[in-house]
Image (cartoon, rainbow, N blue to C red; front, side, top):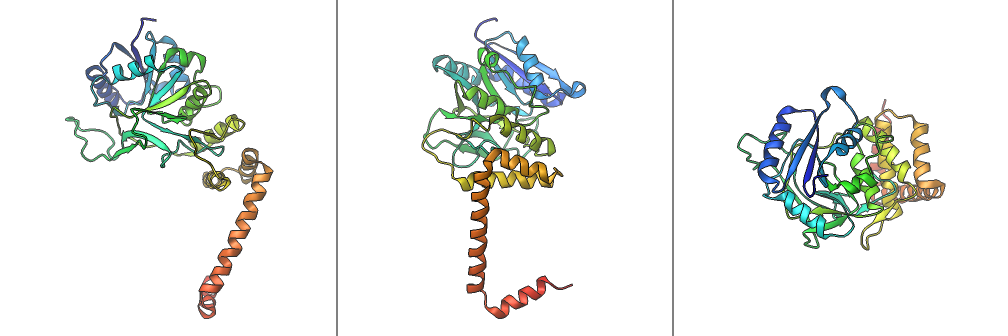
Length: 316
């Protein structure tokens, strides 16, 4: 290893994006670096395998796994991250978007009020040649006004970490195939030993959104099963209600059905993650809510109107 510096690792499928990013890195990173590009257009390896393969060849003490469709406009961003990691004991992974809650029925890092993030939304697919980004929406959430905020899981468009961190907790290429949930799995694994952070003092432009296809939900199921005995995990005094958990579980169930998963497999997974007790409580809660809604319907809607509605619903 050649000392303090950053090995930037890119799993590439677009020469245009990749060349643009490499030029941007050279002008902004502010520290010694190398760029390791893995052209995955023909190989089509899963991203965990690509990242492990490239990280093993990295010569510097810090690794930066990034998507190629980003731009870093902040000068010396690499120096900034290295300095924070060097002075922060037990530093895990640093990203730009992450969640402070990881539910048992995990679907994604929490974007809501409990998330921490600083990045530009993918309103455009790519920047123009002059790097003007006026059409992008800036997403920012930092309620404690920190420069680096503690999180559990991170979004994979930017993951910065020490090589020794990756060596003790590499990407799980045996279980996490393809290109989904690798970031949640990697950051949660690191979070068992170290503290992850979101950087809130530098900017990043990301030019694509997620693709929640069938493989996304397949990997979500694998992730939930893998971590079911370790979740939920929370930073701070936040709480997760059983309603929130079951709501996530039902959301996954619906998406699995929408993507043509077998009903018995959906039910089996829901029970495995939540347990029979939670399922029974959820079913009772559903019945109570249904009865309350029906009662309110009878109280609020006049009988003649109810009859018209009933007839309309049952017309042939």
